[in-house]
Length: 463
Image (cartoon, rainbow, N blue to C red):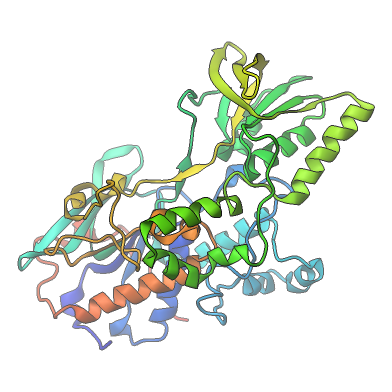
């Protein structure tokens, strides 16, 4: 790709990322490494807009001793570029812990450590990010009869009166996950989702004896159950789940191939019925599945309490919560045992819903651009192999939605396994779009510089 006339490009970003979690951090790394390999005139202009005031990733579940369920080699860059300075191994080297980690003989870092790695990588890309910035609309910009650009409208959270406009050729919406809640549950002071666990526990008044109910059958539910049982040695902890027992995660070598980069391509091009079959077959690799070591530990504790007492840990298996009733100092939980239909009522101090997450619907961000996007008969956005939303013929601007297309890209869509490869694929797609475009003049016409330039321009480090 040759140099572009700098005057024609003034003020327009090649990529604007919505959100700055692991997926867009990986894309930022790919862009930085691309820019370092080309001339200044051919470098991509990119910025990422993040609602949080600083980087944070599942902070409420950074439990002591909790480990990752994905190999450290599937980090932000290694599978795409094994020599990247953003690898987890280079992070360890920078922290003077590489030898110690090797001696630890594990492929799965502590979650605390992996969060620190992500924060370290995000910090190195600080010049690309505007924090405390919420995107409120995407507006089409028509040039010579086609939607060639997108105006990204953003403001400060809680300050709707003041907005900033940035113009882009491509927008990457990586809005992350949001808690999945039972229909009959409403979050409150005594009923939480596990994503906020540590923050809530820090604010909870201490009493000599407490009772917790944990709802869910997956890894997070098991971790929360273990954490509460350990942290509150006088408390009773009731784990409620619809299965007869906690199901081990299937992480064998052959099954894990469902997360391989090649599997994404095969899955995408498979017939819809085959995709649904594969998702059903392999849900136990990620959903409602628990590490075997943790299952064994919880069973050991339960059995030991039955032998020696007192019993504080209870597993209400094959059971379902039918109603949550708010009390002045807690929650009343109505539970039905599914095989017998027997009902039980528990008055509890705290209910923790470890009921999983859903990918945030990108349509919440699309705003005015939604009309340009194609939708399938089932109502889903049509997403191409390169993670771009398929658009009407009069639209050339790109909109990418990594993490929100499990139905088309497979079970790894919202997971960490392929984020480095996916970042490279999105970067390649952006570059291909650029090569296909004819030189356009007067790109910045119609808006003035103060309306789209950030308040403080951050210079890119020269490395």
